[in-house]
Length: 213
Image 1 (cartoon, rainbow, N blue to C red):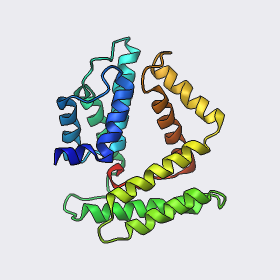
Image 2: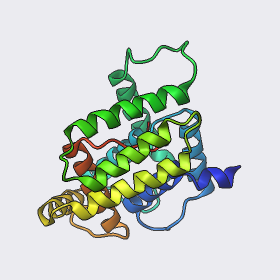
Image 3: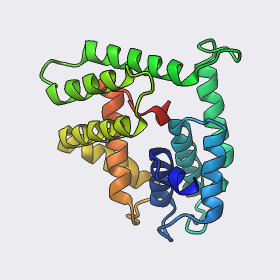
Image 4: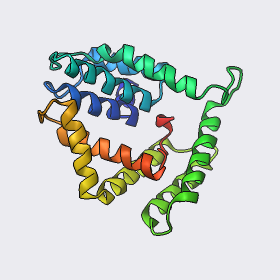
């Protein structure tokens, strides 16, 4: 069961972001894995976890403190704060007595995809086809998480390869600030993640994988 969890997109995305910011050992400790498990059990959205990790390490860099031996649990306070902000932004969209979070989640993602398809230019054929494929997958009574993970990864690849040199340079400059001019292991992954996040926001392309919501 634990191995299945650790192969999920949720675990892998958090591990990738954390190791890129921390540097040092290139694998998670049992305590790090336990921290991810606790966030997953609390149903903290992936975006909130990633935001909390960024905030925690940005704070360390600002104070000039080393990051190499920092455990993932160090980020918990910032993750919880980011989660609280997500809940505040989503207040009123759900009530605690409502059942069927999976179906609610799928419906919400379908709405976000629909809005994206309304604004995406017709020339963005690859993105439109991937979003349509996600819509079809989400129409199933039990959407396949692995299929949606694959589609989300393909969307990320399209956004990255479609980013201009200037957009990639801007992402690199932002990452450079966070790392205080250093280029540790995982720096390129951080640049890619920042560029893709900016492209998603700019073009209003939502995540389609269930664990992001």
